[in-house]
Image (cartoon, rainbow, N blue to C red):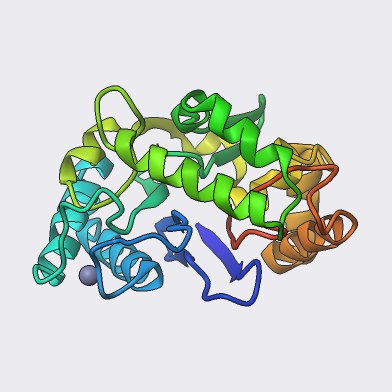
Length: 268
Ligand SMILES: [Zn+2]
């Protein structure tokens, strides 16, 4: 497997996405926004995703380890790296996870929350994604969408949404993301396909996938054409050009003008 990667911050703040590629593994993590609220952690989201990503790669070095077992192990290892922080805080640093692994003629995939794994197969496109987060708190999301980005109303609506999300995050009635509790790994969506069925694959944080899922300015086949011709950086540049036409989020209401974006593009 050949993996091309790139990640770029969406604004002037630190990048809270993380991506890695090895000859057998691609990983994309998207750290969840804290909206400036208390987290109980002195390290921050960029620290969290860098350590979680590194521990996922390490935990999956043994190719027969199931992806959920590797993810649970990585979550435990990262939690053990900062016992001095309050890991029971509902705002403890957290991230979406997308993993693709090649193993003896097969591709194993895992998604936890809304960073999709997209397979460009001989039978067509398959989008593997976990949209449980989209199904909760519709009224608060609508309130965020009502405001242009960079306004005080938008900032307050986003804080209200994140505060409410924290109450349902990693509970049986809410949605699951990678955070301090390894139990989240058991709620990831996993599957396996023969590698021979797939021409290419892409793992994307929602800051890149939004080109298709939110803006509808591209189709998945067009995304694969872009990735083949100009690579992950070219795809992220395309997202930024589209966002620049709507800097205040009027056409496409969103949490930020531009979100951090990460892409891993896998070919055989
Ligand atoms: Zn910490």
